[in-house]
Image 1: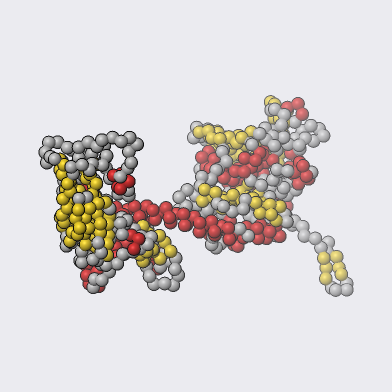
Image 2: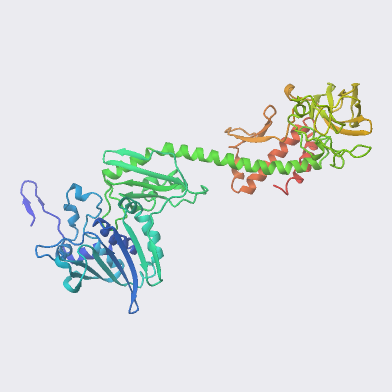
Length: 605
């Protein structure tokens, strides 16, 4: 009854339930997720310290039923030695678990005394069976939509401890949801850490589909994210377990929020504070587990908005910088891996294209050809033969160190055999216009021993606009005043043995001083962000690299698909190759060359 307060003209009183029947209906109807309702029954068994929990789906007289059987502590007994079902039925919203002491409370989740009422979302009736003293069985019966209950003894006995709950027949709208396979997937995620932490064995026996399952806690398969694994708050620690899903395709299952191993929210973005980047990008999956959070009693899937939730939000936000850094590092690693793959494809495309084009026009890059092997016939690819009887011996050349092969020092002073091959060094020479290039020929036998006695060398220009200077024995010098390639041929003769070799010397207008005799293969490329700059790419001659502006709008737009990105890189590559080889051509000639080159690469790219 309200109390009158004369001084202020106000009255006070206490809130109370106007209709207990209506309150129970509201509470029971608040759980609308049938799989979550089954999870509540399984968690009750785990709270009772069960080591084994079995969920049985069966069909009886055309109706589907669900049983949950455990070997836990069972129902607390009365002074008469019977299960105290009456206390459970008459203390809705006042669970006995709330009155446990600190040690007994550890690992126990139930606290509201409404878990059993969730069966309304499953089936028509709930029967709970537990043993009293002596093993005699007793049953409590609850009916959907009813507020009364009944307790009765049963024939037969069951082991002391443990509980058997039967719900059924299942509702028409529920029976196709509560199946063995769906329960397996749901419980593996929902009770992931509770199963791992307690070691309980949860088994599903689906007699309708004739399948049995063991619920194994879901394990994340991706790479763990490098962020703190524990965040301290004034209410305890937030445990962090985040992973990049395999492939990092942005298809993560979300970051769940858990309370002591039981999932509360499927995705943290269900909290409005996290409906933004980086949480909403679905790039990571995992768990935030915070024992201290208070759950919404009805559905057990929401969080009470109190100071504990605010502490959780602050803790999670504190690792945002580390998460963003992890994203950036991941992006960089994936970009480098993708760049290596694209570079291989680009190199293959351009190597094929440049071999088709005139070698005396595209001078800048040295591409390995079969005919460059020491002692090979340039036209046929066969080993050079003696013009007399039979010397089909060739000497393998290493384009990075031919001189070391030809000038190796023998440990024993062996006498060289007959002439077998000849090689010219350097293999990849390039000079400025009108500069001289000195070439040296070395003759060897079939064991690669140097042959000097009785060998004559004959030099000539096989192709190109060049001039031979100071020709003597195994040396010559060549020069040219025209940009282009000069092909030099040497013929080594010893009696009836004749072998030949060729090298190409490239004469260019502008080259670095230190790259005269070093082979320059196709360039690599690297990404370099330069915000607000219009350039797409440029060439670094010292490093032989094409630098691509990774924040240019065209580069960003190209990354919508792998094929589009690969073609974009290929076009930049073609542009730089043309500009390197034809730096002084007119714009129209450069465009002609660009078309010429891209036409021969587009099939591969």
